[in-house]
Image 1: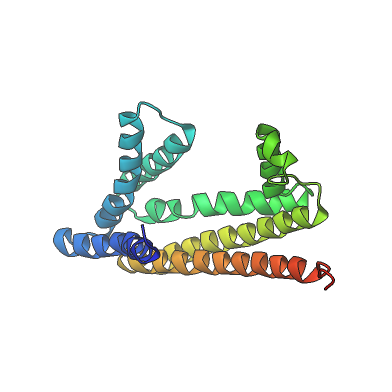
Image 2: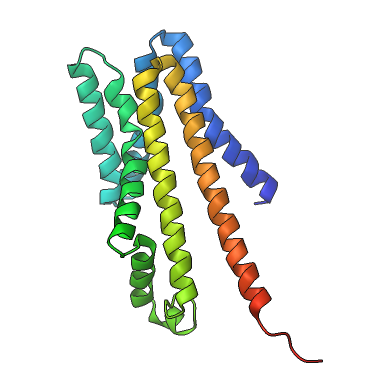
Amino acid sequence: MSPRDLRVRLIAGLALPIIAFVVLLEIIGNATGALAITDGIPVLWALAFAIWRRRIEPITLIPVAVFTLALVLTIAFGGSPLPLELRRSWFPGTVGLACLISLAVHRPLLVLAAAKLSAAHPEQAGNGGLGLEAPERRRLLTVLTAIVGVTGTADAAAQIALALTVSTATFGVVARIASYAIIASGLAVGALYVRWIRGRAHGGRPRPES
C-alpha cells in the first residue's frame, strides 16, 4: 500500500465518524441518539470481530463495558447525553494520568514496557534492539512518557470541558476535531523529539579519519 493510499484511508477514517454523526442528526433529529449510534458502532464492531475470531481479550471488553455503562446512565438519567460525552475522556485520561503518575514515582511507563519487551525478547535486547543499558535510551523513553501523559490528559480535559459547555450537536463534531488536533500535536512533538535525539547522537559520533 502506497503512502498516498495510507493517507487517504487515514483521512477517511477520521472524517467518517463526523460525517456519520451529522447525517444521523439530520435523519433522526436527536443529537444524543446520533452520538450513541456513532460511538457504539466501532465498539460493537470490535466486539463482533473478537467473537468471530473466538478470541476475546480484556482490552476489547473494557471499551464495551464503559460504553454500556454510559448508555445505561444516559437512559437512566432521562436521555442526558453527559454520560456518553464524558465517556470520551476515560481512555486518554487513564493513559495520560498513568504516564504522569509513573513519572512522579520515577518509574516511567514506557521504560517499564520496554523492559518487559526486553525480558520477553532477550535476543533482540542482546543485539541492542530493546536494551535499556544506555542512559540516552532511558531518557528518550522517559520524555516520550511525559509527552504521552500530557497529550492524553489534555485530550481528556478538552473532552470534559466540551461536554460541560457546548450542546450535544456541537460536541459530536467539535470534540472529535479537538481530539484529533491534540493527538496530532502530541505525535508531532514526539516525532520531532525523536528526530532531534537521533540527529544529536549522529552528530556527536566521531567522524572517521581520512
